[in-house]
Amino acid sequence: SLREACDRVGPLDAKTRELIKIGIEVARKRHGGLLAHINRATAAGASPKEISHAILLATPLIGLPEVLDAFVVAQQRLR
Image 1 (tube, one colour):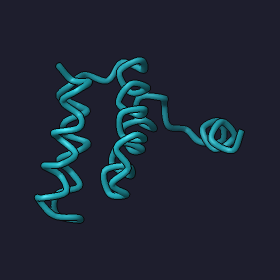
Image 2: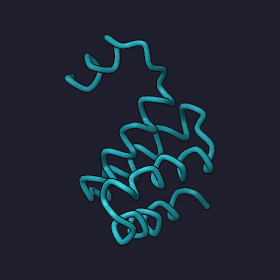
Image 3: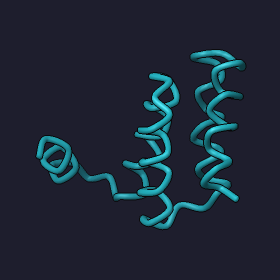
Image 4: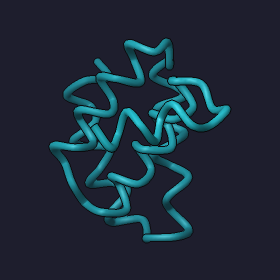
């Protein structure tokens, strides 16, 4: 798939790639994608604190209301 091809060509490890993808899904307001990438990030070894930080980093770019919404969604997986 295109996702797998993009993942293979770069130097980033799986955890880092998934944390970046979490930030992208937060910005896109795609809750299903956010949950999927939280699951993948967790499987790749990301801690709840790392995942929360990836979400928090979107704040100055997209605003606090959208980030708070993402945190509400993320809590389903981070408990």
